[in-house]
Structure formats: structure tokens, C-alpha cells
Amino acid sequence: MQLGKPRAERADARRNRLRLLEVAREMMAEHGTANVTMDSLAERAGLGKGTVFRRFGTRAGIFKALLDEEAHRFQEQVISGPPPLGPGAGPVERLIAYGRVRIEFLIANLAVAQAAMERDIRAPAVEVDMTQMHLRMLLGQADLDVPDLDILATQLSAALEGPLLLYLASAPPVETLDAEPARRLADGWQTLVERLFGIDAPRGTEGDAPQR
Amino acid sequence: MQLGKPRAERADARRNRLRLLEVAREMMAEHGTANVTMDSLAERAGLGKGTVFRRFGTRAGIFKALLDEEAHRFQEQVISGPPPLGPGAGPVERLIAYGRVRIEFLIANLAVAQAAMERDIRAPAVEVDMTQMHLRMLLGQADLDVPDLDILATQLSAALEGPLLLYLASAPPVETLDAEPARRLADGWQTLVERLFGIDAPRGTEGDAPQR
Image (tube, rainbow over all chains, first blue to last red; front, side, top):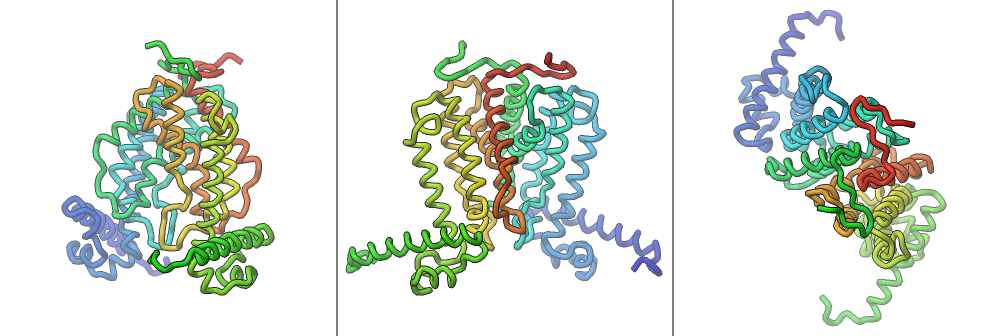
């Protein structure tokens, strides 16, 4: 397949792809995800339906490509962006920052992630392994004295992403989420991490009301 | 619909239902969920296919009914069973016990929960709200000095159930899960709760290795 395929065509393909994603993003900004279809996207981008089909396969494929792009950008910020999300801050600070920005990311991309789910596949298109691996790395760096850091990373990933992934299965599709639950989830994440590290955590044990 | 429907028929319906669930459970114990179909169930129970169809609607409906029964039994243990799962123990002890038994429950019912998912519906048939409500109640009783107990309950529910709910979406279906991940998840849950309550939690902060 590669033989005889001129480089110029690949550059074309890439340009078409970027153009289509740009137009899809415009259409979403105007009317949400519902009106982005293979046909409407081709028409507005001034490209043939065949081109859209070859690039994305299905309507969900358009959103998967958009989500991949966003996820890639997010990941770059985590790997090499400024602290505290990127390297340079302490692991606990980075854990908190990761959760806060991840919640924003998931909420901002909820509608896209939902539209990216293929009808016959149950797994959400959102990449969840990255969170688990990143939390695991930071927990390791933080020298937390917990016997099973792998399981802790799994459970914290679920605590962070689970409440939002639940929205992916909801019908009708969620176009936006209020700022209020986003803030509460972010604050809740921070509290959870701080408690885990024994930071600023008044004790409340059984039947033993904390002093206020 | 209720008028003219004799009580005797309801008792019959109930007996058939229980009989069908019992036979389904036998069939699962022998060969897993795969061989339980509307036809094979009717045949083995010595009942008409129409009866099975009226009771359960779809094949997934059989497993949903089985799961409901198990969930009901679990819930009864939580509400009125012996402590520490049931009432009578302190809230932290009950939080830990709930998580440990819930993990066992989810693992024991993984194959059933998976088979209970309708093909065109993405949400798992497992009831997740109960966990959230129960954790919220116990967190409230424990007088934990955290500003947003609702969010904490949501995030802890996800930490507890998320790692196992992910298996529901997996293909091929999971018939069993090793004892090892179950034990690690249960221990991890206990550690998480203990840390949250500042119980036996050596501090490990940024760049600050704990004394061992």
C-alpha cells in the first residue's frame, strides 16, 4: 500500500484531517455535537463525503479523533508543561494539580467523549490508563507508606474519573455540566489527597467528634 | 389489569419465577452463564418458553433477576445483619466492612452482572446508588471534618466499585476473578479509609521519606 503513494498525498491527507477537525470544532461550538454528522461535516468543510468516511470511518470516529487530539494536548501538559501539573513541583502538589486539571478536562470533553462512543461498544473512548500510570508514578515519588501503591493508584483513578465517566452512559447526552459540580469534585479530590498524606487533617474517629 | 386476576395465578407466577431462578443458578454453577438461554432454561425447568419470556423478557432479564435477588440479600445484611457490616459497630469499622464485603459481592456476581447488561444499553445493571448512600450515611455518623461529605461519598464509591465495574465492559466475559486481586482491593480499601480517618497512618510528604 505504501509503494507508489506519493508524499504529496500524505500531506494532503493530513491537511484534510486537520481541516475537518477544525470545522467539526466550529460546528460543535455553534450547535453542540448533535449536528455534526458525516454529511454536514463534509459539506461545510467543502470536501467529499468519501474523504470524511476515509478519515473517520464512522460519525463516532470524528469525535474519537477530536478527543485524541485533546487528550494528546493534556498529556503534553502533564509530561512537559509548567508545574504544578508538569514536572518541577513536589509529588503531592502534582497529584492535586493533576486531579483538578483532569476534572476540568473530563468535563470540557464530556459531550465529545459521549459522541465518541460507538453504539455497539460499551467501553468509553476516554483513556483511563494514563491517569492510573501517572498517579502511580507520583505516589511512588511521594514515598507514601502504603503497602500496595498499585491498588491505591487504581482506586484513586476511579475516585477521580468514575464520577464523571458515569455521565458518559447517560441519555440524553450531556452537552455541558455546571461549574458547581466541577468545583466540588476538584475540591473533593484535593481533600482526599491531603487526607491521604495526613496534611491538615483533623482526626475524626468512631464516636469521637473532632474539636472545632 | 388487577381486576379479575385471581390470587392463585399470582402464586403460580411467583412459584415459576423462583423455580426458574433456581434452575438458572444450577445451570450457572455447572457451566457458567454462557449456556443459560431462554430455551435451555425453559427446557430444564420443565416450563414453556412463553413462561420464561413473560417472566424475564430477554436473556439478560434472567440475569438481572438473579442479580436483583443477590443485591437484595446483600442490602438486607447491610441494613439489619450482624455487625460490623450491619448496625452495632462504629462508623469507621462499618465503612471498612462495607467495602470488603461489597468487593466480594461484586466479584462473586461479575459474570451475572455482565450477562445482565442489555446489548443496547451501556449502563451496568449493578446498583451503584446504594453504596453511595450508605457511605454518605456512615461518613456523616463518623463526624469526619471534611467540608463536602456528598462528594467524598461519591468519590469513595467510585474508588470502591470503579475498578470492578470496569470488568463489566470487558470482552470476553469474565467468569471468575482470582482471589488475589480481590484481597488486594479489599486491603486497599481498608488502607484508604484508615488514612482518611488518620488511623495508623505514617506521614509521607513531598521529598520526605517516612521512617521505617
